[in-house]
Image 1 (cartoon, rainbow, N blue to C red):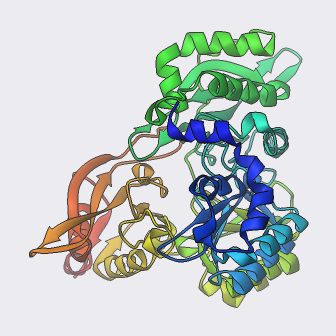
Image 2: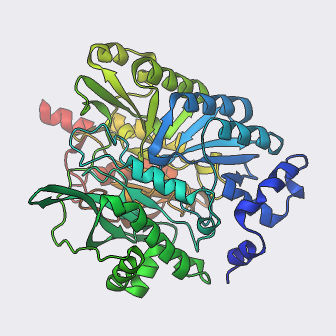
Image 3: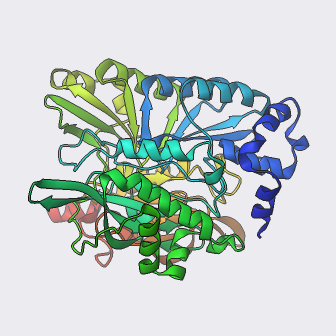
Length: 508
């Protein structure tokens, strides 16, 4: 077994909770190295360079109540760095939590019905869904109850807190692949089967999606269909197969797509059928998915007379005050709920038609716009050096500076242009799925070691998802704006993007 497996054999991750309360009375230096790692089972990641702990909070389907959001804002202000961050898995992170404050923070998280167990290392990560599930006019059905049941079965279970590696799940009832099914270890997407007596609701199954440090892979559609009432059991069967057969010797080979390569899709289908006690039917024709959207803007809901507002949160980063104000707007105008998205944005729903204009005048919407510029709209970043010991370069502040310069120099005739920036090679910003992906690194420029990026091009999500390809390496960040202007205005890469001076000359 690898060293992590040996560590888990000595003591499971969930067993560290009593020790956390004990360690909170001392110093970080007194915590045994293994237990410092096990604390990740409770969402606690020690950040030596920044000081304190990062706290990762699970938000199934990205659905957060206004009261919970307000409490997170309070915790960030009182115990953290006054910042609440939205992740690319629809979850939330707080930063710079001091060791002594951890018991108070953990109890507050629990009291407000929030969950942080099993958010790190060898566990099922936050479960993804369409962020407007139950609201979208053209969805097949709302998959939120399925997400919640899967979460209930997993969280707190010793069986599912000791996987060979992390495991990502997406279940969505919409046709736009908002949950990034092709980038998850298992992804369920809706397919309606016509019958003589009506229709039957269910899902297609996709396996083996992943984006990480060593590999990027688009999930394979198995060509089988599972009825909605068996969806939870089907996901759990797949998870059990991974738990039992995933590679526990070599962590670099311990993802679902490696198991798919080893077993083959036919064998995996056979094993799923055996565990379900019935044979899933093959369905050859895939459902034609709609174009993937980020849900930014004001949109009508299926509930007549109501709208949802998709708000762009630049970099997914909110101050405590902004988070608290977002919660207030959700209570005043909506139903007291905020939905977080995989693009690190936020949605307030159920705004009545007679109040939508008043809502649009709220001051917060100057910062969190429902009609942002294409580059702000498509910006996704990891936390970078300001919040992660693994990061090689900063991301959040430089990305905003980059966007500002590009907007000053370019005319962009697109709704969005997705630039994803990770501070290291771990791809927490899912860089290979962006139109442009930036991977933090270092290089020597004029004899000095400086921040740099590798540049990826052509990633996409949705029905025709593909992995972006590396086109440039070790570009100094100081030269990044000039480099991207050349790429973005090159017709072999993009159309509908022009230098402002050139566009003005053409116009004259």
